[in-house]
Image (cartoon, rainbow, N blue to C red; front, side, top):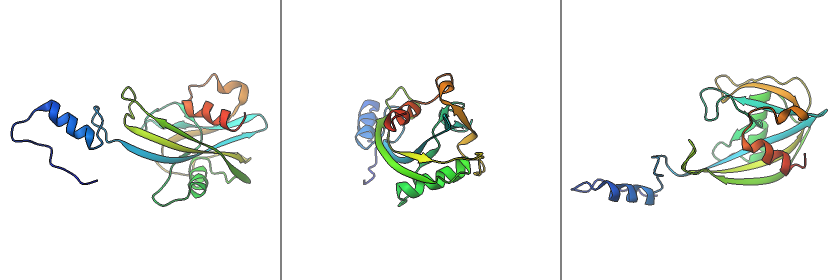
Length: 167
């Protein structure tokens, strides 16, 4: 997209805001953008592998599926494996794309203007997880018994992932 100068000779805030929004900026001042990400749903021996979002990230303290944003040009399969290694230290013995979730965050969310496209994978893995990424987006990883998942403060993606993979 070509950038345009937004300041007219006599500023009219409504006109400036309308122009900014037409160029892809939300009313909250955030650019409208699309984020591609890959996430793992791993259920082993009746427990779901979850990670807790670190304090420096949106959703701090909440639990989510291991995974995250794809790097430029990265295939979703490769992004999944990289994110699993960073956030859990685990390498899946098998993985299969289970579905794709598309969600647009509205103006009431801190991620307003974000269109999240999430590749959800059903994975097989076992072992003791541990975070390998320094200063990453998660600060804790653990196996959570399925009957306890509903007692945690989880992001909506957890239920989407469980539904998508049939758990």
